[in-house]
Image 1 (spheres, rainbow, N blue to C red):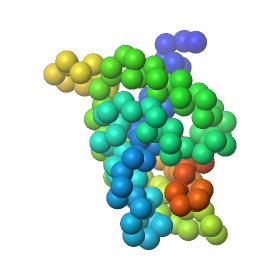
Image 2 (image 1 turned 60 degrees about the vertical axis):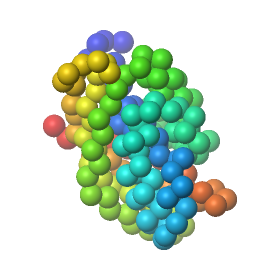
Image 3 (image 1 turned 90 degrees about the vertical axis):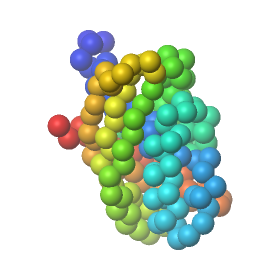
Length: 154
């Protein structure tokens, strides 16, 4: 795989990982369904810095699909493990979150700004802004993300 393609794939996956790294937050269980999804997304900024692959995967449906088939749950797990193994650091800024109900599902859209690099770096190695759209369904008492799409904005 060419370096440019690999870098784009990794940035997209990192954006997705940041989104899913939300689940352990107890705040996700209070408020309306829409508030629970918003809180989950907002909590991702903290969880992404922790490189907690299990916490991320706990929030992803078994039938998860990212970017129209470019990524599945297994691929997400591989990327999360690699990122944790490399001890990468991350900065995450979530823009305003819009949540729309579509039947028994919720669709959340927002802008995600990511910076990344090695933990000992003074400045980030890279920064990217993504337009995110995520689809959530209830599984038991929890909301799980079953689909996500992202596009680099700049």
